[in-house]
Amino acid sequence: MNTNTVSRIKFIKQPTSSAWLEQALANLDTILLDHSHCERKAAGVALNLMFRYPSSTKLVRTLTAIAQEELQHFEQVNQWLERRGIPLARLDAPPYGSELNKQIRRNEPQRMLDFLLVYSLIEARSHERLGLLGAHCPDVELAKFYRGLMASEARHYGYYWILATTYFETEVVNERLEELSEIESNILSNPFPKPRIHS
Image 1 (cartoon, rainbow, N blue to C red):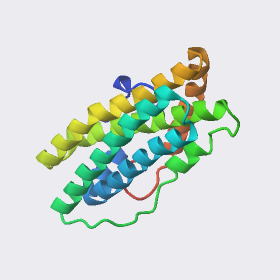
Image 2 (spheres, rainbow, N blue to C red):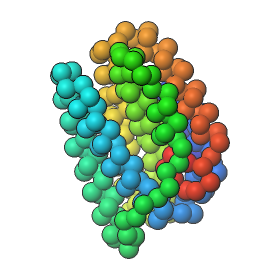
Image 3 (cartoon, one colour):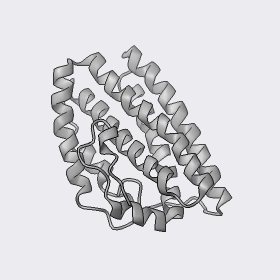
């Protein structure tokens, strides 16, 4: 399966492997359940940043819209789970998110920049992988659903990058993004053995 979509996805250094796609397609129920967790976490991230930076007006307004959309996606994915008879349940999380969060520096203003760029990278990778599911999923309706989510994920990683360039010089943003993009690809070069959106 051809997974080389990296030329169309900004920020991502290495494309997702065909091994990930094959594993995901063989375990669609688990991928859907993990996707539900991802949407819930993404909404939580947006809300947490709004609480952390309440006086940053553009950030608050932008992330309000993102949080609302992520919760809509959470509900839509949960409807798919119900449709397929998959109960909500806990899943072991891959190290992807926690390893990226370790890269966030502790002191401001660098901390704010890193938050925005880490979550931009996560959204960019989600955009890429949902696109792969949309292109290759054997369930026609589910594939259509995933293709429909791609535009939202693209907007989200773009919004996080725009916020970064709103509060920081573009050269500083791009330099740090380059560093974090390399780290993101390195994390995924050691795949989590269980099927996950970010394994």
